[in-house]
Image (cartoon, rainbow, N blue to C red; front, side, top):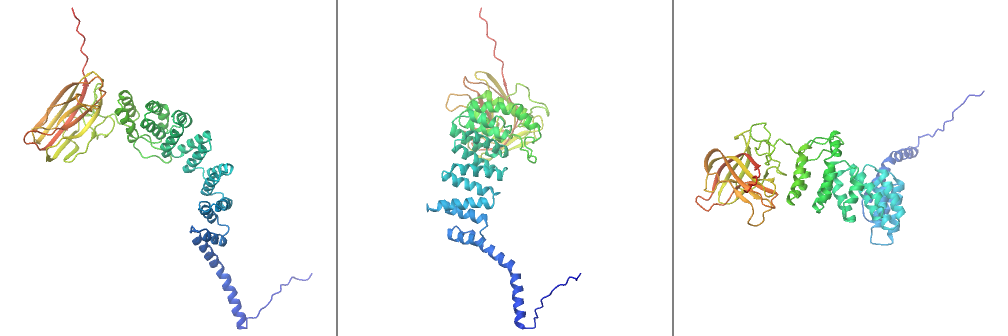
Length: 472
């Protein structure tokens, strides 16, 4: 059996011309990657243009580039020339064929198809966009709005539900859209909120409904929020109030979220609902119930109406806690110089001016027609003026006289801790009073005020009604 032999073609390089020819061939092969890179770089540079002719040149260089197809399609479809719309739509379709995994291409194709009144194309593109990126919230927002425009309300509600599961930040926009279209909160509660246990979503609806005057719907949702649904959500370990959210777990409610709703309840005179919400916030741990007064660690008595009357912790500046009313030439801080407990509040008047000040106040719920006693302990240091700071009680809804507006004697000069008290009767329509530290303008001499005031153990308790006297 004959052996295998290899044949070799020899090409002598003795000639300079042959050597140059071989060198040129090798150089061309080595330059191919660089030429390809240059070609692609040219296509990328041209594709950044908004000029159709430039984009056509880029596409001629790199015809399989989905991004160039997409950009050319957008430029043509939304150009002023009506004849370009169909061509633009063709390029948008080709972009999705070249890269079907890019949700942006499907979203823009859906918009173009909808504008072209091609409902079948638009619906398919919307569905393909969601399939391409199923965890992107804005795609569900777009899809739900498309469904609403197409008259598919059930599909829209389903996409809104999924959107709020992914990102509760959209809650306000979702509820505003639905309320604007349907004019009632009933559909939102049934279609979107019924299965949602995220307190942030529920609170967004409560705030919106309340701001639109639908207090009944807002309070009904609050009742659901504070129920076992919310408790179950919190107990799954999402986070404690005020803590950072755990990985993938939204934090529980915070007071700033609830404060606008609570303020509207107070402002509208719904004292029962406001007190109920405040009590719920304490039970849920959103508001600490450690507003103690008197001996350190001693809780306020059950009939005490002033929250945090002993200033044992920093005021919340919201709800039924103390609120600051920043004013020039008055500084406010908690002090270790307490009448009882660990702290008092310290106010320093530094302006040496004669003007009215009301740097702190608290809203306190009362019962119309009932009698109350306010008491507190105060201390002064070098307070000038014959009109010193005092505690004032005023009907929160008072806009004209006569109305409830009484105050304790003012604190002047330097005085040790001493008690101040006053009794007052809530008017027939008085549901909240504003208890404040107040200094009225002086009409005597010296009129300017400077010095330091300490206040501690502020209390309001209801007095028992007098038993009727039997006539003989």
